[in-house]
Amino acid sequence: MNRLAIFGFIVVGILVFAAIFAPWIATQDITATNLGARYMPPSAAHWFGTDYVGRDVFARVVYGARISLRVGIVVVLVSSIVGTISGALAGYFGGWIDRIMSGYVFNVFLAFPGLLLAIALVAFLGAGLNKLILALCIIGWVGYARLIRGQVLKIREYDFVQAARALGAGDLRILFVHILPNAIQPLIVQASLGMAGAVLSEASLSFLGLGVPPPAPSWGVMIEDARGLDRLQAAPHVLIFPGIAIVLTVLAFNFIGDGLREYLDPRQRKR
Amino acid sequence: MGSLKHKIFGLLRRVGILLLVVWTVVSLVTLLIELVPGDPATAILGDQATPEQIAQFRSQHGLDRPPFFFSFPQDAEGARHFVWHGADNRYVDYWAALLRGDMGKSFRTNQPVRELILLRYPATIELALASLLIAVAIAIPLGVVAGSNRGTWIDNAASVAALIGISLPSFVIGPLLVYAFAVRLGWFAPTGSEEWSDIVLPAITLGAALSAILTRMVRSSVIEELGEDYVRTARAKGLSERKVVYKHVLKNGLIPVVTILGLQLGVLLAGAIITEKIFGWQGLGLLLIEDGIGKRDYRLVQGCVLVISVTYIVANSLTDMIYRWLDPRIRVS
Image (cartoon, rainbow over the protein chains, first blue to last red):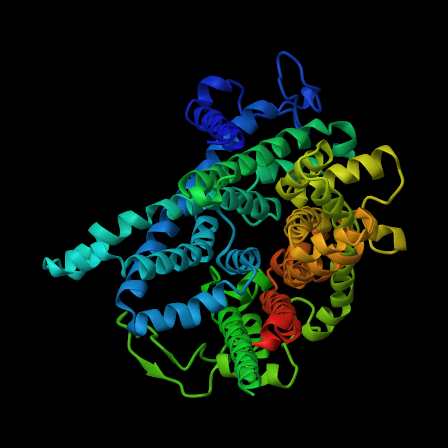
C-alpha cells in the first residue's frame, strides 16, 4: 500500500471518529450565537476561533463531518447498489434492458455535467438534505452501472462460469454467487472515489444554497457564510478551517481509491 | 472507402446521441416543473394573491394546460383516472416554442427568457475561454519541465502542486484569492465584471483544477513520448535535449492534451456556475442561481439549464468529431 493511501486512511479514520464522537470532542454549542465574541482568532477556548455571530468554528467543523459522511455514505451505498443490480442485469442478460442502458442511459447521463443535473433537480425539488441526497444518487448510479456491466461481460466468459453452468447452476446463482463477487474489487475503488465526489458535491450544492439550509454546520454553508467581504477581512480563518476540512477529506478518499486500484491491480503498480 | 463509411457512421452516431441528450434535457426541464412543491403561481405571487390573479398568471404562462400527453387527475371521489390529452399539452407547447427559438417569458419580469440568456451568455463563454487560456499557460511549461526531469525534485514539486490544484474546490480557492488579492493586496476588485482586470481572479479560480489536470497529462504524455524510437533517433543525430523536447516530443505529446481541452471546456461551463457566484460575474450561472432558482423563476431555470447543457454537450461532441477527423491512426485504417 502506498504512503498516500495510508495518509488517506488516517484522515478518514480521524473523520469517522470525529463524526461519531462529535458531542464529546466539541463541547461548544454549534448554533448558539454570542455577539460579544464575534470573529475571535484561534485560541485555547476556541481552537478554530469564532465566526461572525460568535459560534465556535471548531465545533461546527467537527459536526460538519457528520453531514459530509452521511451524504457520502448514503449516496455511495444507494447508487452502488442500484448501479450494481442494473448493470449486472444488463451485462448478464443483455436484451432490451441492455439496449436501454448502454444505448441510452450511459450515453446521455455520462455525457452530461453531473453537477448541473444535480442543481437542476434540486432547483425544482427544493433545497434540503434528503433532496440533495436523492439528486446525487440519481446522477451517481450510472457510473456504477457501467462499471459493473463491463465487469460482468468480461467475467461471464471465464471458464469457471462455464463450469458452474455445466454443473447446472441457475442464472441468478451464477450472477450473484460466481460473477459479482469477482467484480467487487473495482467496485470498491469506484466507491472510494465516489465518496470524494459526493462530499465535494454536497459542499458545492450547500455553498450554492441548494443543499443543507444554513444554521446546519455543512462545510459548504460555512464557507458561503464566511466569504462576505467584511467577514473575510475580519476573520479569514473562519473560511480556512472548513476549507481545509473539505480538501483533506476529498484528497483522502481519492488517495484511498487510487491506492486500492494500484494494490488490487498489480499491473498498475509502479515498477 | 471503408474508412469514410466508418467515419460517416461515427458522425451520425454522435449527432444521434446529441439529439438524444437534447431531447432528454428538454423533457427533464419541462416535466420537472411538475415536481415543484406547491404551485409555481403561488410561489411567484405569494400567499396573498387572489384566485383571479393566480388564474390569470397560470393562463398567461400556459400553466393551466395539461402537463403531458396524458395525466391521472383526481375526480370528486378522490379516485384517479387516465385521461388522454393528445398533442394539446405543455410538453408540446414548450417544444413548439423552442423550435421557433422561443423559451417562454420569465415568471418574474415577463421578459423573454431568450433575451435574458443572450445578455449573459457571452460573459460565461468569455470566462470559460479565459480560464482555458490560463490553464494551458500554466500546464504546458510545468508539465514539460516535470516530464523531462522525471523523478527529480522539480517533478515531485510539480506533481504535488498539481495534486493540490485538483483537490482545491473553486469555492475554497476563489474566496482565498479574494482575500489575498482583493482584501489584502487590493490589486483586483473582489467582485464585478466591468473592468478588464475583473476577469483575472475568476479565470484563475475556474482554471486551477483544469491546469492541474492538464499538467499531469502533459507530464505523462511527455514521459511516454520520450521513450519512443524517434526520440532516440533525434538524440542519436545529435539534437540538443532542448530541441528533442520542444520540437519533437511536445508536438506529438500535445495531441491527447488537445482532446482533453475540448472536453474540459464543457466542464468549465458547468463549473462556471460556482465561480460566477463567488465573484458576482454576470454570466449564465449567476442568472440561473440568483434570478432563476433564488427567485423561483422556473421558466428562467428551464432556459438556463437547457442552454448550459446543450453548450456542454455540443462542445464535447465537436471535440470528439474533430479529434476523430484529425487523428491519423483512424484516417489510415
